[in-house]
Image (tube, rainbow, N blue to C red):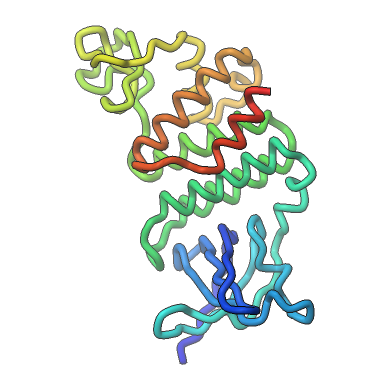
Length: 245
């Protein structure tokens, strides 16, 4: 029986049998892991509440034949406590967890930068310093960059000319008039400036942006993310509903 220990963010859980749960955690050193938490759905469980989504937890597991088994869990920081009472922040956080789960596809493959981005994103979201959708879009853009899918935002994605005219998801970002494919969006310059600010962490520029540019930015970022993931982020429907209201 091989024991190992790591710390990570709980991404999701689902029921197994009558009393157990399978817990998916994005960890600092090991990468994404799935472990069985035995008996956590019983009221007498010693650590069931420590293995809920959003929790930064220190876990010990032993390696199983199909799934590893969680034998210990200690809470480092319960990020969910600052999010559950605020619907916009909570739904943005859920979208972060789902995106991290989708971007880190393989299990037990180290993904330190994605882990650090997720921790930073949840911490920023919980602090309330910035509008939730801005934090979420910044997380999306930086996570895509870490995964190798950063959009071109300052020069044409195809020919590198600075004469930007449109944003084409299939081309990988902004494009010039000569390279513009059919159906490319034509965002305002302030929207592209906002996307650049979010990617670079320029919060002064992001916080000063207008509502219409934030809405346009969110639409482009969500479409770009989901195109690269090749399927939708289900939790975004709730984020978008809040944005629309």
